[in-house]
Each structure stands twice: as C-alpha cells, then as structure tokens.
Image 1 (cartoon, one colour):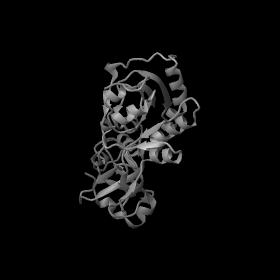
Image 2 (cartoon, rainbow, N blue to C red; image 1 turned 180 degrees about the horizontal axis):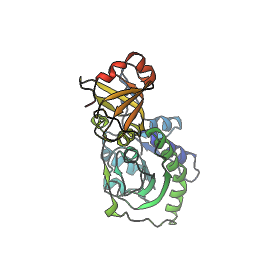
Image 3 (cartoon, rainbow, N blue to C red; image 1 turned 90 degrees about the vertical axis):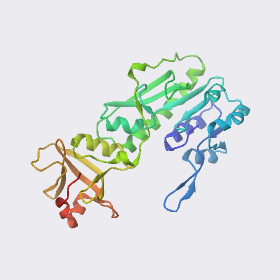
Image 4 (cartoon, rainbow, N blue to C red; image 1 turned 180 degrees about the vertical axis):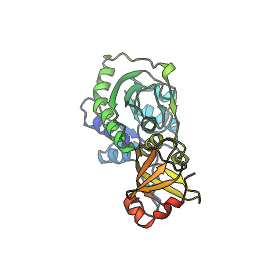
Amino acid sequence: MGTPDFAVPGLQSLLASSDFEVMAVYTQPDKSAGRKHILTPPPVKKIALEKNILVFQPEKIKTAMENISSLQPDLIVVIAYGKIIPQAILDLPKYGCVNVHASLLPKYRGASCLQAAIKNGDKKTGVTIMKMDAGLDTGPILTQLEITLSGKENLEEIHDKLSKLGADNLVSTLIDYCNNKIIAQTQDESKASYVGLITKEDGFLNPQNSAEEIERQIRAYNPWPGTYLILDNQEKMKIIEAEVFEAANSQLVGSFYIENNQLYLTCGQNSLHILKLQRENRNALSASDFLKGNKDIVKFKAT
C-alpha cells in the first residue's frame, strides 16, 4: 500500500526480491493535475502496471476488506499510503502490516515528518520500519536508520535520501522479521511528538522571526506549499531560495535593503540574503536579475 514518489523505491525493492511476491498494490485514486486538470495516476500505480501487478484504488480502504481477505496476504507493506488503515485489515495478514515511516519515531508521528526535520533544524533524521497497530505511527519498531543533516538540505534532498534508505533496508528487515530474528521495540511515549498536514498558509514567512528560522522554513516548504512574504501593499512575494546573513542592520524589521547588488531582508535577528524570488503574477528570477528592474522593492516592507 502506497501512493506518492516516496513509496516507489520500496515497491521496486519488493518487486526485485526473490523472497517476496507482490500480489497486489493498493493506492489512492487517480487525481486531476496541472492547469488542464488531467486525470493522473499515482506514481506507485504506474510502476505496478508496468510490472503487470494488480492495482486497487478504493476511495475508502475499509471498503476493500473483503477484497484484501480474498488475496490471503502473509504480509502487507505500507509506505506513504495516505489513509488510516482499520484494525480489521491490520489483523488480516499472518505477519500483520509493516510501515516505512520517514522519521526517527516516536519523534514526528504524522504526515509532515520530512518537513519538520528541516524546519526545526534537526541534526539528524532517518527512517523507522515498524509493525503497525491501531494508533497513528505508534507501533513497535523493527529497525531504525539514521542520516546526519548538514543544515543545508532542502525537502527534495531529504525526501530522496530517506526514500532510498528505507527501500535499501526494507527487504532484509522483512526477512529477519518474518524469521523471528527481530525483537520489536515498544516506542517511548514520553518522547512522542506529532506533525499534521501542511496547508498553504504554513508558507507565510514572518519577518519578526530570525533569519535562521525563516531560511529553514524556506528549505522545508519548497516546492510545496512554497514560502512567501506579504508586502505592505498586500502583494504576495514568493521566496524560493535564501541564506542567512549574520549581520545586524539598523533598518526596521521587514525592510528590504540592497548592498553590492545583493538583496536582503531585515529579520527579527540577522538578515535574510534572498537568492531567488517571484513577485505575484510574474516569473521566478534570481535576485540579481530581479534587481535589474525592481530596485523599488526597497520602498516596500514585509509585514
């Protein structure tokens, strides 16, 4: 069971393994995409169809109970499926359901764990492969795999690293689990934290925050939902790439200034060196190209 690009390497690992037979793939329904609203299948479905694997796309997974039971699976693997799986389905397979989750549980249970690690400035993150129970990412841990973060990674980089990390270790973990070579570890509830779904409003950049906080938010939320400032004329201006400039500035917080043809925003602490941006209804530009025709940006203030 899985839906987005994050789940694809895991499915490919299972398909390449001689130890497991993939009987079917369950994924979310096709959705319209792009300006033309073209009905587009999930990435996992595309891979499954290429390999002639049965694909099921129930609107609600609980309605697939009878269908799943008829397949008599020994094990169900879940990677970024995007729906809560009821206990009745969790209990169907001989070995239960195993989930690949993109955080070091019990930290960051929930939907936006990839973004949270960047936004919070974590020094490490990783993947947890766990046996599922009725709770939200609360099941016992089979294995955990860590990566160290430099503080420069963007969302796409962490997504790809953790997707591959989980896939590279999935088959060996499942073999050991099914052969009773793993003693599952109960999660420490005292260390649990939750992260919910991200909305477009989460992309708002508050200049009262430190430049460090804002820079992390930019890396965490690009490409989606994207990050933006609201100028005092109510225009939304997207900030696509930036870095911290560790220097005090006498201007008011939220003020733009230009030094050596470089664009900066005064923040609650330090300044944000803006590298790439996009004004409303215009093309995205590097800051240097932007300043060729927009030096009047210094007249505006981010609020």
